[in-house]
Image (tube, rainbow over all chains, first blue to last red; front, side, top):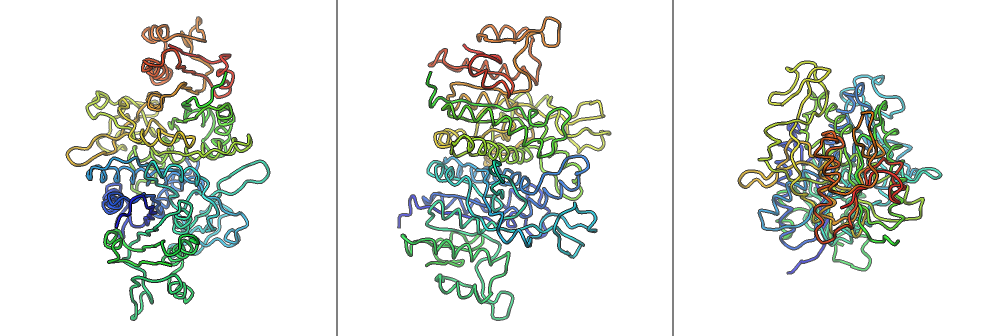
Length: 316
Length: 316
């Protein structure tokens, strides 16, 4: 079966680059990224038009901690600028490791990281109830800057920020125009959150975290992807996760997984948004019924999953 | 005179975003950037195809200091990854402020920041003699990681890194393909320096600083620019700078400025590389003689300089 020129969006978990027990040193992250790109490069070899996106949890956490610890010497940057920094950082790691992997396969294709802003609605209910913990743990509340929302954490207190819906990818047009010419890396960390400023102000950054899987779904929509692949640290979506009757979902239809979703099988902030992104992507496919596909699996099973031999495959 | 579809590369000084006496807080940087983009947006309005590049001196200095001050909690990233972070940071600031300025002019054009690697030669003589001071000042030599080269500074010691020649812009192909579709921001901070790894390794990052003006010249070459504009904090190139007989250069030919260059009128690491970038760009124009132009001026004089009424204009 020829799959040439079909479009795939691949979303990489930020956690997959800094694994449990690892410190996040660069050589570790590059090794993990290289392993991921070994598999991703095969998609390019098979003729897929590739668009990549990625999480940034541990990386932006490190940048926030660096900002915090040096705040008496260097003016700390707000979260949304730190997200832009992490897009540059991780984008560079992907560009280099993917370039090298493709080079070994004899493929010479331009790869570009696009710094991406994602518009959110300042009336999104998330802004009234921040829920997403971010950055370092603080021993005392008084050590936090005024005005932050916080939650209690096992080590004291932790900042929480809103997690609003992605409304529009500001660079959508650019991404669509580039994807014919280059492999595109975009929307890192869910995107730099921006809102429409009041009056004449245009776009302005805002401290929030947009779920990277929901943004990945949006990205897959705007590039009219045929396939969305969400790579994470588990092999497949599981029902009754952590219970004795836990079981892997193999091939599943939209209405079936919707039922499981509503029954509460998938954890918020973890498998939940992945499944939600999958459902939205499949639902928004009115003309092209039954041709879209979502795969949720781990890096190492990517190639098997493409052949329907591993992972969770969700279709309409 | 119609200038439609002609190509201009604009290089912004990193210092111009954090001015003397300023702390580098985000609102200051955004205000300075917005002022720069007010002028740059006019080039787009006049029909120029725009490619932007920028310095990152103060910004990457801040990121290095953040890395240093938190090194016991967060594994510090090497300089070349910090450069990638600063490309994300500054790229975002340019994207947002330029988008807003164009929006006010009724112009809706995609703008993309491309994270850019620049290949350098590991046999470049710069690697035998690091000269470029970078990052924080250290009170004691022993406070520096082993293996760093350093110089004495007024506050103690400071790391110096090599400043090799830009050999090739790794993302050149991508940039050329995108520039017809979008305003491109690329090669920030002179680019993330990479060398060819030994054996099978492909490209690997290396700690160095590529002069941003020399890279800007290279960028102007690869996109076959008609005009290169270097924006800095002085209004024009001066002869006998700082002496009683100091005088501004207005319109000057290649051979004339070459003579001044060889006479040592232009300071190393400051006006020197700007003039050198200009000369190289003009020299590498064999087919298109006398059509290329370089402008060196300050942000506020950009529009006047375009009309030959301010700044230094260098032609062949």
